[in-house]
Image (cartoon, rainbow, N blue to C red; front, side, top):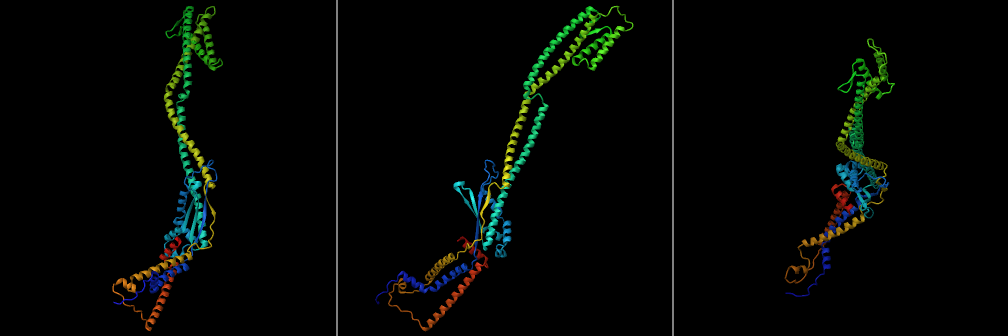
Length: 531
């Protein structure tokens, strides 16, 4: 076995250089293809511009101690609902048609896909102030990205104006809705209140005098009527006694009158009876009317005529002397007494009727009080509800006026969007840097993979790792003229292939960047915007 000096172990750097020397064509190909794609995208990808504006949330200008707003929705909730209204399909289609947005996408995709793309290009960013307002929104930013700088600025300003107009409309609608609801409720409660008022009034008219408030007055009237009845009874007793006394005196003086069982006097002469009745009627009338009353004057005339007739009646024997004035006076007094008794009895009936009426009122007062309390309780409850609703309705009207005059919480554009002077994306330097790094990594990976898949041995050390047989010697590679020519042709073919691959890759990048391949174009656009 031959022995000699063995070659030194190659270092890792030397081995890496050796691998690079063997696999440089593969590595260069793996480097140029993605790098040319990155360069193509950086050169041909359309520039995207972004414009934005800040919308402030101005609080209510009139202090809430004077006018309280009826809009209860928080700005965060209202902003979300307004965003859904502003970004709905119909409005986005109007903007797309108005500004001529996404012409390439509209030519190849349905309008629904175009509106979805526009929603993705619109960004709403909220800004809160947790220190001052407890996290409430103080402003928000409206942004839009597109191909034309002037168009994106106009779109942003239009969107911001839509937010302002929709916020005012929503607040006015909420305020008007609250006022309308309270107006309707107030009308219904007012109708119930008027119905209950009419029922209370009808109750008072129907049971007049039986109201609990009249209890003391009714008791006082009963007490007065009791005293009047007692006095009437005493007067009747005295009148009856006086009549009996007069009747006895008349019977003793004339002997022609008898006291009837009913208590009256029955003269034997019919004219005398009629005269007595006329005197009784006259006495009754004189208790109610004056002497000038027509009936009083008439009765006096009839009495005078009848007395004259009785004195001058033919066939009647007249005494030589004048009639006894004492007897005539007694008769007149008896007639007056009878009239007084009749008047007292009539007064007694009237007093007893009044007494029964007021006694019934007093007895019915507890029942009426209970019924009136039920009516009053319902009336007071409805009246209190009506006053409360009326107050709230007046406040709602003020709040509605506040929103109509735009003195409530409003959105205000801090500064209108202007056309951007530089594209927002893509960033060519960043794209080239990322493409270069990725290309280098891909090239190194492809070289290592090719080396790992290659099973041939390239130096003594590799041979020693796979066999235990001793190495006797090393024969260098012999290259002839034919081999050199073939190597040159192989290099030229490889260079041509690289040129073709780079050209194809650049063309593919151009087609992708210009939207001729929609799927890859959208993917590249999204990745660049995210980066």
